[in-house]
Length: 413
Image (cartoon, rainbow, N blue to C red; front, side, top):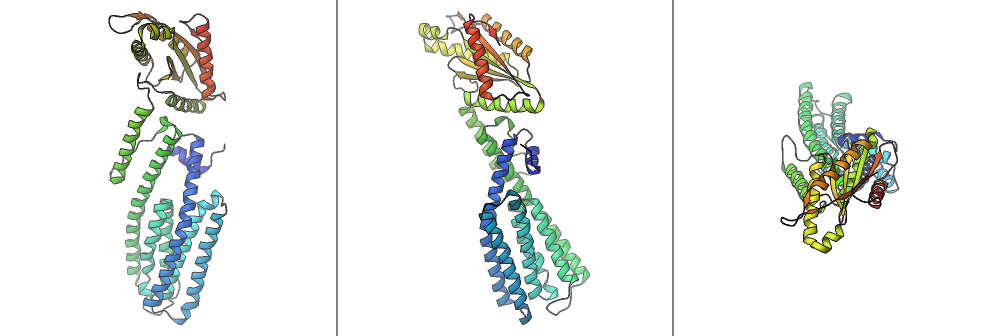
């Protein structure tokens, strides 16, 4: 899959997310943009109606302005209706990307045109006041770039109608100092608006990415939330959400008896490790571990003793594994350990070290010691090979079966 510039931007924000996840985020963003543009058309119709009403009631509109005002209104409605029609009939993502800029330009042009045709030169600062509405909507729903575009277009429109063209309604023109003051004041306020709403928008995007990563199960790529320099209510919400997710992950993603990862968490972790191996050109080793004759322990000693043995075995595996490894209970008395960035020799050495530690350990409750052995199967996934998580787990399980068939208490690959 070719990574588009937008997808590249997403993956830069979350360096470890997959291309598929980046594409899913972009699709959701495009769909949301389409929905926003569609419901905003009603806001635009309402705003146009309000402008017309205010013009008729409060402005000293001359007769010559009625036709230009009607043309502006008709052109504006035409732009809004045509873009809405295109969006409702399977618009491409490219069209959805530049439609906000087109509508934003139409908003500023219509507002400036109405102000020019109904205001004396000293009242053209209304263009700047009404421009704040476009800035706020643009940056909040579409990001800082659209907020900057709205501010720039507003300033350009104000300067053009104030200094560049003759006044439509006669009156004394504003002084150069007054124009400079209005533009400067507008720039300061718009900068604050763009920064504030833009920051809010970016943090909402981060929260959305977090939710999508959790939804797709790519738990190793989670971004850190709530680390803003100037925290607010949204910061508290992000922190609460992340804490809630951690607590739920501890309850849902781990085996309650041994504290190891469960099968679902194991598969999600292995997908991430394989993806990283493909990017780095490294390898991922998987070891499948099974207790030898564990059924006899449950039958002769009882399940409570069997649970103690499983807990003790899990403790040995966690002590033997590295911090970057993942220990999981695959089911029953079978465990799986993921060894990222590990080759054949390293994986076999690890498996043999684990087998010896188990062989030397005294299992069982106090007063009822017993010796336990394990069989280990090792499989290796290379970043250059098109191997899936299921294939790698099946290879490790097949190697484990060979170890048990060969007499148990041994390592096979």
